[in-house]
Structures are given as structure tokens and as C-alpha cells.
Length: 185
Image (cartoon, rainbow, N blue to C red; front, side):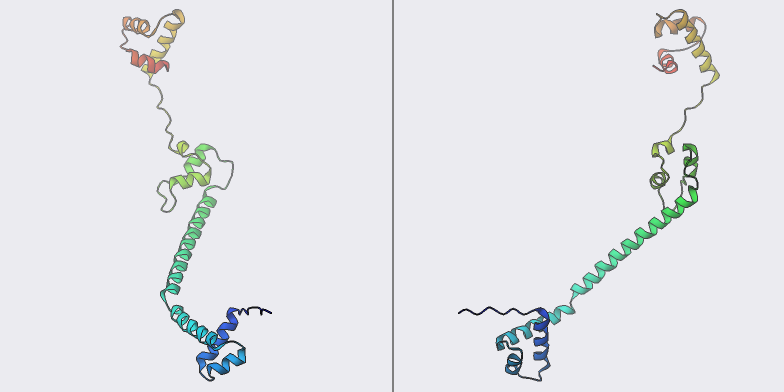
């Protein structure tokens, strides 16, 4: 008949090893008290001594350092989120802001929030923030556009070269490049 192999949990092994380290009893007495073999007691005692050196090793220091780094990272994220929330609460009191109002809310020189992040928080496309409207047309250009329109209405078959020649006859200096720019083609 085979006997079942005994298994011991870590608490039990630690208890036996501590008893052996105390030195108050012999290994044989400890083995008979806990019903284990003497070689087991010596083996667990040795493991306990080897593990004690690791208890004070740099592994714990490394774990503490990693924990501190992670803690700092999380605190910095919390701080960033607080800054963003404070900025947003100051800037956006009313949710229904027009694009121009949102553009006015962006602080170009904010010390902690980039323009990209501000645009994201306020719900404005960055391209809308950087958009510069076209300069208004000068009177000279408006006059040329009206003359081109009149010529094209009278002669819809004229191309850019013939309209240019007709304008030159009226003493307006214009080239095809300028014509195309004014006509939007």
C-alpha cells in the first residue's frame, strides 16, 4: 500500500524554520514535534537563512524606487488634469460658443497648456484657430473684376487672352496670371 506524499504550506515551513533558528531545541526534537524528517528541518532552516539575505537586498529598494516613480507620474497626471479643468472652467462658462469666441478663449502663452490641448479642451479645430481670413480686395481689383465681368457678359466666347487684350486697349495693365487670380480659375 502506497502512502500519500505530505505537502506543507509556506506558513508551516516558516514556523519550523524559525523554531530551528531559535536553537532552543535540537533538530531531532523539532522534527518529532512537527512530524517531519530532520533533513526537511535543516533544508527549511537553510532556505530561511538564504531568504533572509534577500529581504534586505536591493530588490526591495528597486521596488520602492519604481513605486515612487509611478507615484510621481500619477501625481503629475493629476496635476495636469487639474490645470486643464481649471482652465476649461474659467474659459467655457457657456457651452454654445461661436468659433470666434472659442478662438478668443485660447491663450497663446499659457505656461502649462499647449495651444493643441486648449483647442482640444474647448472643442475647436486647430486649423480654425490658426485660420487667417483673406485680405479684402482693393478698389483697383474690384474695378478690374467689374470690367472683366462686363466683357465676359458681352463676349462669353472670349478667353483670358482676348479679355486681357481688351483691357489693355482700355489702358489697364493686366496679365493672364492676374486675370486668373481675379476670376478664381
